Image (spheres, rainbow over the protein chains, first blue to last red):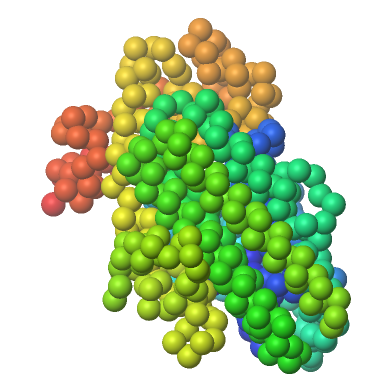
Length: 328
Length: 186
């Protein structure tokens, strides 16, 4: 298992190839931490917030920043995609595939939603079933070939189009001294750099503000409750490692501090852990008021205030982190 | 093991004064059906992953099912009264909007909107229904029927293993034909 499907899949494949690296390190070096409040994306039936960069970006950044060579491919033909996958796994090559999460029928029904951004590792095939390693499932899972085909070729936003990748080669070592400042600076820029108002720290504030208008865009109290409780799911359950990826990033900073022997980064990791705690409070609060249908303007304002508090804390954090990184 | 509720109460007491970093012992949730990885401060002061259960599923899953059942039965009532179409029904169940449904079916947004109107549904082609059924992961026939079993109609959230009758639909090579098999749940 892993905290997040994209970084978890990537870490597992790298380890299989012989490169010892942790999931937080992959997440951090790929500058995965992000915030975005999406309300005008045409495919969304309801506004949502995102906490990590666009799917695939993490891998692309890792590829660009290290000498890891990926073999990637998309397909037009479903038959060809399946045939190629079979050939690769018959050679003993584990293959990461992008899929619609909904079709992963070994996952409990209540968890499964349509999201074309899930990554799994296909490691074998027995009869008509593929053996799958999924970051969100504790055991090796099985999925019927028809289901996997459907999941790999589901249409819609960010359609996978049969996308798959495997790792061709890994470097013997990674130059952490060089990569850590680059990747952290990138994250700082994502969060407090010049960005549209729905991205980064400004995006967190937009979220806090727009949340107040959710009662107007929901069907009924059940729908509003569902959307508010999804805040908890997005922050904790949907592959974040808790606290909306903040604990994962804190662990990355702690590991960076050890790698390059920097005490200031260790202090920053503690502060990021505290920021994660604040997000966790938000997620518990959202779950509680959602369940109790206690969703009056006062409660939504309280929730909005807690989110604004996170925006303030994160803004101060990244400003401080910028100073620390510039001194490295 | 300290339950998350206790954790939250303790956290709420300190929230306005000082933060307490998430500790390993506070992070465990006993919920085997949904496991996940959380990053926490370990006993030795290092940060790392633990495998634990989902807090929201452990504590609020019943609420999720209640809402789901209410939504389905509200929509089914409307469907029976011919106020909505089955395409609208499944669109809401799958949480798609018109654009997403259009992208998943390859049918234009304009026609997707039309097919959701009661008056226009009958003008949808069989080939369109097949595309919708594929996107909704159901047999084509289910766009024109709803299968309910005995007590399920009154009590739709009854757990599947407690149902007296088991209904299984399986596809055939004919894309328009599905076999619905009814078995006693023994």
